[in-house]
Every structure is written in structure tokens, then in C-alpha cells.
Length: 252
Ligand code: NAD
Image 1 (spheres, rainbow, N blue to C red):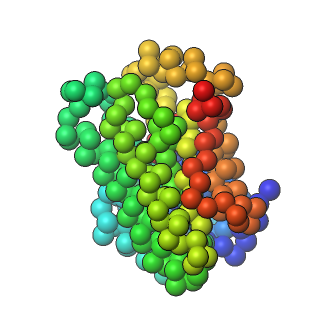
Image 2: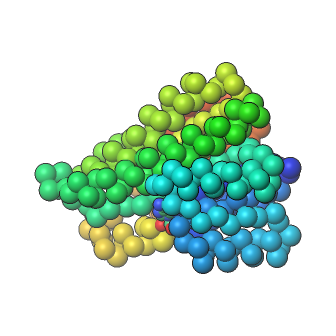
């Protein structure tokens, strides 16, 4: 459906879930892909499989909450493939739900260090390469939790609302320089993160599913499709947008 031949895509959180599916989709569309994740073994297995299938792939071990590692990730990608055209800043974590009056500073800082400061650091270093090129597209991973609130999830939702603020401000700054920045807001998607929540937070998940007009979980490939579109020549007038891909959840 998309042609990214000759282009280079960087995906964080690429060892699992929607990051993994998106990395494979970019490779299938002809891009050279850099797959970054904390999980060294899983990222290497996927990278090796992509290479064995004839794709250009690079595995990078990176903790996105550490800016020095993020800078090295982008440098490594550009040193290997020569440029950077598309980035999906997707690595993220959940913390256990908590009454807002009982949330710990530790959990608040942990989720924001990965989900918000991690996206900030990735975008910053990707932009340093893209502004030299005068081109590029960045998609930051927010959530339905970036658009609406849900009880007991203030810390996670703060991180995901923050991603939209980062995205909009940077998009305004970089649109005149030929670089498009958007956010994607997935609904509840069938990934290992959600499988974990379905087990540990069964009641809360039932409530979420009650408000899901489409009546099913989303699939990772439905997110990958939207990310590739946002990075493609099909969306050249889409800038600073927070795109809900959520089965209608936020249409309420
Ligand atoms: P997942 O747990 O399947 O995959 C997340 C990946 O990120 C893992 O491979 C993990 O190792 C990696 N990761 C975690 N912390 C990292 C760090 N500090 N540095 C580098 N990599 C790190 O999760 P997923 O469901 O595919 O979620 C991907 C993104 O989508 C997250 O940002 C999540 O918040 C967001 N999201 C998920 C859903 C959902 O329903 N699954 C909904 C909305 C938003």
C-alpha cells in the first residue's frame, strides 16, 4: 500500500506490540529500518529475521528515558543508513492504576520519564538530523489517554496529554522547514501491554470495552497502517494533528 523505498525509518519500542508491527510494515514497504528497544534479545531476533528476509535492518538497544542513549540511537541509525526520513516514537509503559490522592511520585516520574521525556528526547535528536536534510516525518505515540481522562490513570494520562502538547508545538516550529510532526492516539489495542492489563485490571478493562463502539480490541496492524500513512506522501497537509485510531472510543 505504501512505498518507502530508499527511505529510512526509526521505531522505538520495536521489540513488541505496535512498534514491532510498525517496524515490519515499514520494512515491507521498502524502508531501511532501525529498531530500538530496551529488550536486547527480542530486538535482535526481529532484526535478524528482517535481514534474513532481505530487508535492511539495524537493532539498537536504547532506553528512551536516557537522553545520551537516545542521541547515540539516532547517530547509529544515520551512520548506518545515511539519513532519517520517518520516526515512530512509540516506546511506552503503564503504571498500576491509582487513586489520584494516593499516586506515588515514583510512579508519576517513571511513566513520565519514558512516555513523555522519552518522546521529547527522541524527537529532539531526530529533528537535529531532519533539519539538516530539510525533510522528514515524525509520529509520536500518545493514546486515547492523551485526549480524554479515565479514573485512576492520572499519571499515565498526564504523560500522554503531554505528548500531544510536545507534538503541536514542535509541529508549528518545524512545518516551515519541511518536517511534519503528528501524534497518534491508539485506543485499546491487542498487544502484550493490554494482555497484561486484561489479566491484572479485569474490571477496569470491562468498563473500557463497554465504551468501545466497534466492540472489539484494535489490532497492531491498524496502528501501523495509520503511522505509515502519517509518514507518507499521502498526508503532506497533515501537521500537528492528534489522530485517534480507537474504534470510536473518543467519539463519545
Ligand atoms: P508493548 O508493551 O507491547 O511494547 C512496548 C515496547 O516498548 C516493549 O518492547 C518495551 O520493551 C519497550 N520499552 C518500554 N520502555 C522502554 C524504554 N524506556 N526504552 C525503550 N523501549 C522501551 O506495548 P504496546 O501496547 O505496543 O504500546 C506501545 C505504545 O502505545 C506505548 O507508548 C503505549 O503507551 C501506547 N499505547 C498502547 C495502547 C494499547 O492499548 N496497547 C493504547 C494507547 C497507547
